[in-house]
Each structure stands twice: as structure tokens, then as C-alpha cells.
Image 1 (cartoon, one colour):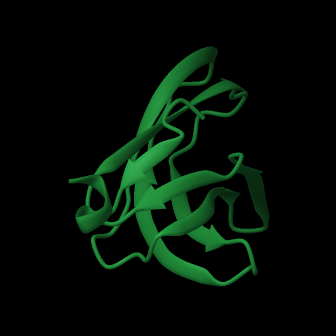
Image 2 (cartoon, helix red, strand yellow):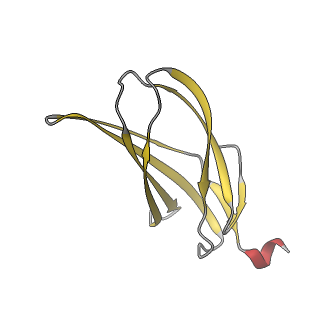
Length: 105
């Protein structure tokens, strides 16, 4: 995790090292989860990365309606290889602090 404190309505950044061995398009699900395990936001997007090893920085959006507190980001990537084989990868960031707009002024 690169951004440890994020204002609600702004974006954070995390870094990831990955080695992708298959040439397939994936669907990524980003979930923002509080300390009690409640999922506050889920975003789905199509992700395409070439089959290679790389280090990248990824931006994620914190909704403006999210209350102040500690949260983590769970990222799940789903690849459908063919009609009978799926590959699912999942990882989580460390906790980060979300502040409301009023607290930052």
C-alpha cells in the first residue's frame, strides 16, 4: 500500500508484483472492507495484463460517502480459461485510514 491515509472521494494507490502465466482477459472485483468485515463498496472492471512478470501501481477510488475509519482493499481477479476451467486470484492490502472531507480541512 502506497497511500496510507485517503480522503473520502479521492483515490489511493497500491503496488503489486505479479507473474501472469496465461494469456486471458480477467474480471477484477475491488471490495473496500472495514475492520468488522463489512463490505462497503464493490467495483467490477475488466482487466487485461499481458502474460509476464511485472511490478505495477494501481489506483483505486474511495467513495465520498465512506465514513472515517480503517479499511482494507480486497482484490479478486477471475480468469475464465475455457468453458470448464476458471482461475481465481485474491489479495488484500494492509489497512488504510479514510478521513472525511470535513476532517481534512
